[in-house]
Amino acid sequence: MARLSPDEAAALLERFQRHLRERRLPITRQRMAVADEMFRAPDHPSVDEIKRRLRAAGEPVGTATLYRTLDALVRGGLVLEHDFGEGFKRYEPLSSSSAHDHLLCERCGRVIEFANDRLERMLRMTADEQHFLYRRHRVEVHGTCAECRGRDLESLTGGRPRR
Amino acid sequence: MARLSPDEAAALLERFQRHLRERRLPITRQRMAVADEMFRAPDHPSVDEIKRRLRAAGEPVGTATLYRTLDALVRGGLVLEHDFGEGFKRYEPLSSSSAHDHLLCERCGRVIEFANDRLERMLRMTADEQHFLYRRHRVEVHGTCAECRGRDLESLTGGRPRR
DNA sequence: TTACGTGCAAAGGCTTTGCAGTCGG
DNA sequence: CCGACTGCAAAGCCTTTGCACGTAA
Image (cartoon, rainbow over all chains, first blue to last red; front, side, top):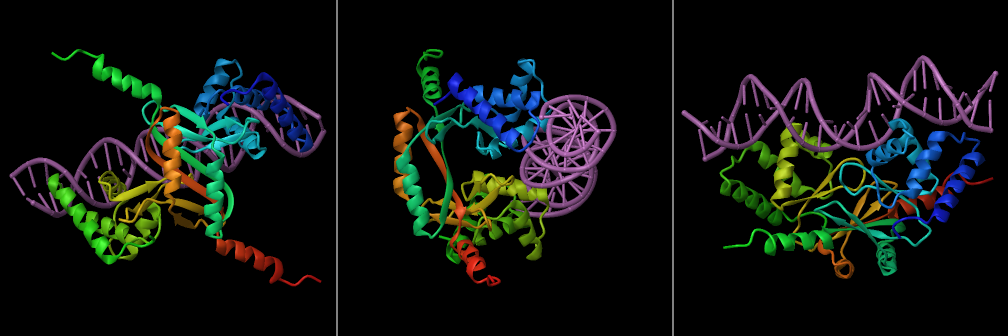
């Protein structure tokens, strides 16, 4: 669920090119670089992080172009946009695997994915009861990830021994 | 669930005063005005909306003070802060009634509350499975509210008759 | 009296927009 | 060649911060 396979990434890149061709839009070096970087992402990077990675990869892209290209990818249904309430947005390649929601570690910022279709069924039912037309949902669980829990425990027992 | 009863509002206002007194913090006209306005709110107003209401009520409050007071109310556990990904935050008085989540109408911006404890139990279990320590969750269902669905239907059948 | 609050205005962080120069098809 | 793109810089939004003045206790 984390990282797309090289095949999936290649397929998505091709889909993006087709998407652009169909609209008679130029296939530029920058657009390919951004899409490629996104399809390789094993995580949920912010715009800043994507910019950094592109620069590191020797394919620097201007901020405006980056935002515009991400927007195209999102509207094209190839990338998901998340707002976890951190004050900035995160982006995630749309994997072929099933939909999922997120566990967010308040300590280290880690984002962990989980799938649960009962959840969506339940939300659809709830919406129905209110005569509300379901379109999509957002579910986040905030707390502390396994690693940070372990670290906390360590600092209690393994740290400077008492007495 | 929507609007606090006058008694609840009064009780919360008193709690806020106690909160301030305990910390030896001044009980100012502005703080009371903001708290009072929040505890009367039947909805999930933005900072801008709260500011507008205070001005309309003849109790104008500066932006900085408003943000600082809301922050105090949130940290004091008297008001909930929401980020529905609209680019600004919304605030909601913490009612004595049980926790709830939200249906968000993409058409008119309306926010509808719903309660479902199975949901929280399910999320706690999911977190557990990942050895993740549950602290809180956020669940939103985005779609179209009953009113907007009705309006859409009208415009299809009741609008300018075809032919 | 004095510590804290208030409001204005400036600064900040993220994102969008305007525009001159550039490039894909 | 032409329409669309790119990148810089400026502008926009919402929120936070600095500071001189005001006020609750």
